[in-house]
Length: 93
Image (tube, rainbow, N blue to C red):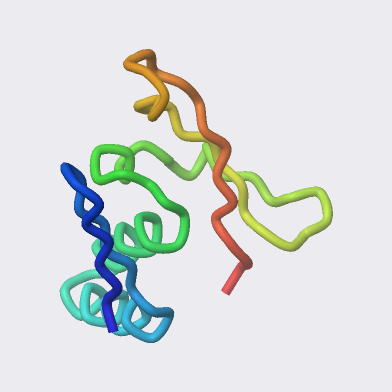
């Protein structure tokens, strides 16, 4: 069940792994790009405006061979200056 945290001016919600799987599959019924977009947001923490950034050339396989890695340039949550975040895209499926 979706968990909602509403401490004031910002409302956040978290999906269970099962809910995220269902959301990914449902997006995938439309097309594979939507499924990947949901995966990048749900599993990697990308923001909506960052989803279109990583291209094939931005991904690299980790040295230990367990995960895909990429960097995203976007909003710095501690200020207004743009910053680069390094993202672990998870294991290869």
